[in-house]
Length: 195
Image (cartoon, rainbow, N blue to C red; front, side):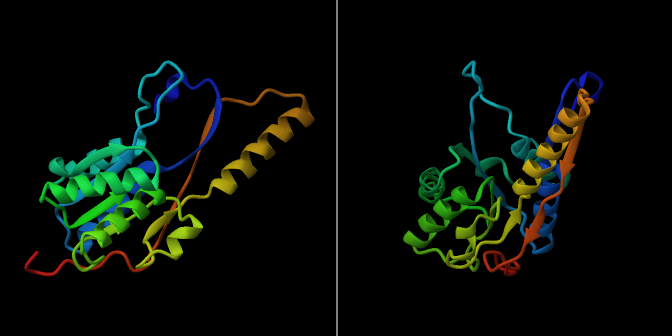
């Protein structure tokens, strides 16, 4: 983040910390081959948005000396895309032992693909999502994910804006980062020795 040229007020999630925690968690479970399933969003000018989740994944995967290069796929932030990316990975017959999905819908689609192709989660492959949407508690098995405090982002933003309007002041440029929290469920497990 370029703090020297900060010109506006923003409230964001701490994606860097999320990926550090996710990869630390998977590494402690014994995983060395960790994949990334992400989505690509586009700016108004048609250029792809540089997703901080992917940047942080690459940074910590390198720092932890993980095997990830053959396990990165990007599509859309949808279950359909998660399903298609996972099918592509399965058909390549080259699977990691764990996956970080950049959103719960991607993770849910990937889980369905794994189930459809006869893989057991987490016995054959562990998976972590991001967002903690309601559906993540009802997948089979329930999805381990990160809780993203999006309500709090809106709440803080509204409070800052309300205060600025009330006081007839301009908001100072600032960046507020909110932490996300790991919600451990049943889609990850310790890697067996022979994997």
